[in-house]
Length: 193
Image: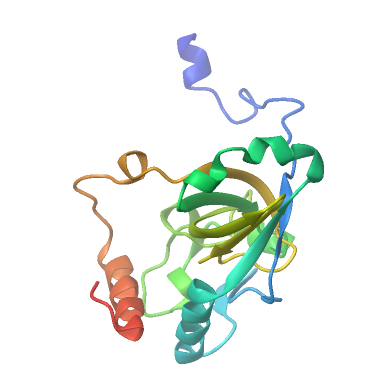
């Protein structure tokens, strides 16, 4: 590849015709996202205690991923995995939320403002969201999973099996604010961080 291509602007490397096709959709009882994005930034839908309760509910709730019938063959062998990585589209992230560049993580003003790519915020230029779930069962084109943080009718764009050797990293470093959030969630769950 030419050196100029490596240093080009987004306009230089734009791929005409680039598109993402849905492979299915999410079916569950979660109607609204916990976090909301608008031109002011990220805000929580509820008080912190309520949000933690909702996160715990999502972790244990069963969701269904309904795969398009014509893609049924793509699911062959998926039953052999206990966990899956699900990529889905944040279809309720409004246009102004996609323009945000910096936010307080989880809408918490006491945490530092960081760039969108330094967060797991749903507000991003392309709201491609990712989560790892436990596969409970499969019935034809329907995958029943737990731990899916998508809302009802979220378009699913890809599914990959979770492989510990490919997913685990050594010497992981995260900022202090992220450790704080994870510690708070773990304390609520009664588990160790």
